[in-house]
Length: 96
Image (cartoon, rainbow, N blue to C red; front, side):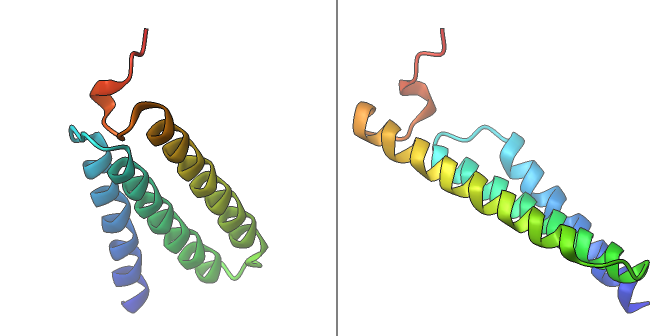
């Protein structure tokens, strides 16, 4: 019963991160935080499933490494955007 509650909480973490990411955000930093929140929900989901089926948890370490690389890349893009444009608003970017 407790395992199902933890699995439900992992799904809620991912879903709330997805809702924040899809909603209309003005700042790049809030989008990056919601992506990290979704990665945390996926990590919890992976840990629960691997423990449920009694697999090794090596893949979770690889997943955490990729999450850290994604966060560092996002922060690097954020810093370069602030240096070139002066803010992190999406409206200041010219996509075309």
